[in-house]
Amino acid sequence: MAEENQNSQAANGAQGNSPQVQFSLQRIYVKDLSFESPKSPAIFQAKWNPQVNLDLNTRHTQLQEGIHEVVLSLSATVTNGEDDVSFIAEVQQAGIFAINGLDEAGMRHTLGAFCPNILFPYAREAIDNLVLRGSFPPLMLSPVNFDALFAQAEQRRTEEAAGNA
Image (cartoon, rainbow, N blue to C red; front, top):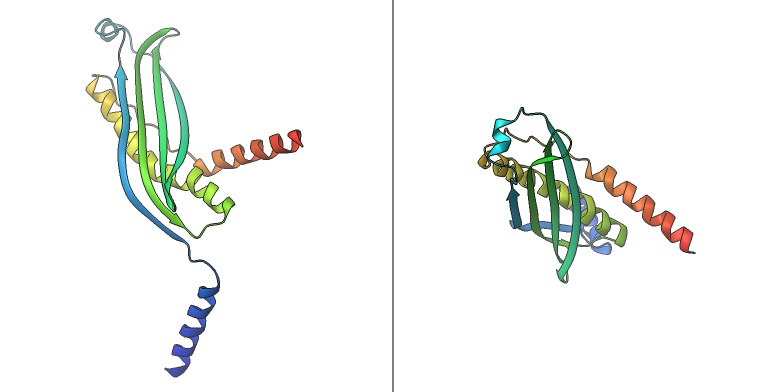
């Protein structure tokens, strides 16, 4: 028992030397929401042959020390045929996160991939709900690999920095 206490104290002492990572979700909310159906009601008479274009973007802002807002923007434009826009559904799903104890690279990854991963299911549900309210078939968006997107963005950032040097 005494040995376990010594091991526990040693582990706690080792942790005291390095900053402890803290992460907590403070709030999730919709920042902006929009739905347009410019061809309705005529679009409901046409044969349904949807083509989906999804635009995705993230941004983050430091609100105060250790507190960050991350905004995931999704815009789904669905055409019927080549040029007939059936509807446009857009959402800006946001979250406030308390994050401390990360180095610069870890913070970039957390804000650019981890937080958007948390927000995406909420944004996907909001888009699907908008589409259903517009009387269109459900729009089930596939999961997004934010880690891969972040890695691509970091690679581009590194290449641009090397090109400018």
